[in-house]
Length: 506
Image (cartoon, rainbow, N blue to C red; front, side, top):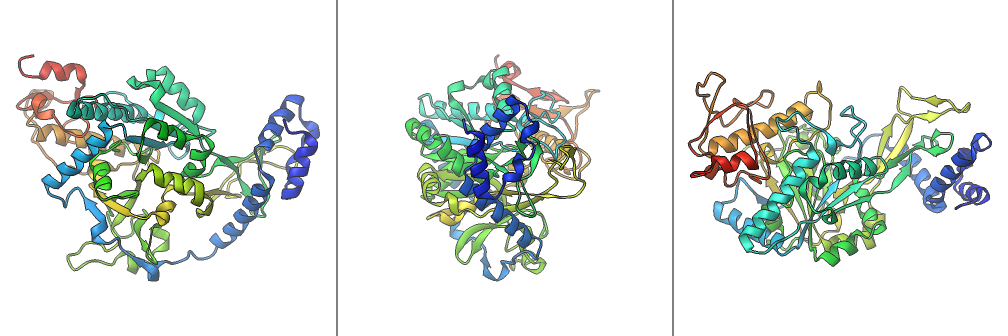
């Protein structure tokens, strides 16, 4: 372990010795814990980080850089689309994706390092129960989708296959996530194929470039953003594990999207067929000023431009047919080849832009008392996973329908969007559509038919409450065999057990 003298020398070289001001008040155990934390900080990196944070925050307080004059939309030949492609093309992409899954070449990678602070909970978002009839959490829904897509690939190609699930956690989420998975038997997955690893934590910094203490013997730390993935892949030997397993393609996504199609065969197949090394799923922006980043090109380089970097007149530009010119909303849902991830990790991850987040960071004052600030007092620096698009040699975008594939959980109920209520309604509305399209009809509590409606408003429940287990259907497939001409009472929960009983001649 680092000695006190060594720690002092390191901090002195970084200009951060103030963090030791309570040293004499610490117990022997507290000193050991603190030295262990300090030993993980490289003095040169620390010095650069603190200086860069203060400089970036100073710049951020000025006007956002505008990229309008440098922008152009993604060229049509590099965009695929679920709604604008014919059935035969979609089937070809799906077949290609299923083949890659069956050959054990596909992995999924979950970004789950953040806490559910905005959601109002202290545990990882993946553990959240949004109030579905089944009571399933986001983690369980995602695990069951992996199980089902493995089953579909196995059935189609005749050999058992595995889609490894890599889960990037943080200091805040690793332990509770591991415990939750163990308590729930890994939701039926083989534990050896669920690989959890931890991203780096970096110090929060005051506006004058000084590390913030959250306790007398603990630095205020935060995950380095989902773009910390590329450093974490190296730190935890994840790419080597992928290589041993024969993984060539990786589907990366965020934990909070209840509609995410893990290892989506159509998306995988599209990217593989185009020879892409990097791909992004996008949804059409709901309206010009919607606060989502836009996938586009800037000076010929692919990137995501944040809504704050766009002037209103640029965001409102439309094609002659009325569609927005800059319509490709980023949903943090990406395809990468393993080779591309390897190249980024080895050559480019140090070049990723540091984004500034000005936050309220609890701290200890000069008397050692904990202070919870009422206004922002600190800087948290983070990298974004999509900032690697610029290094791609063959980038593609793939447009999907928002109502089918994107409904993120970010806020507590009471907020206008992205709440437990809105995401629950999104999933139940999707499952209701699937059930009606499969030929079933719903009855109310008195046995009277409920008039079917395939499109419902986002702020109300669908006409009937229906939840379908991912173990029965991955994305609506095969339901006609089970539900055609069936009369179902709302609420209806379709799982593996009653699906068998609903089959003809069962």
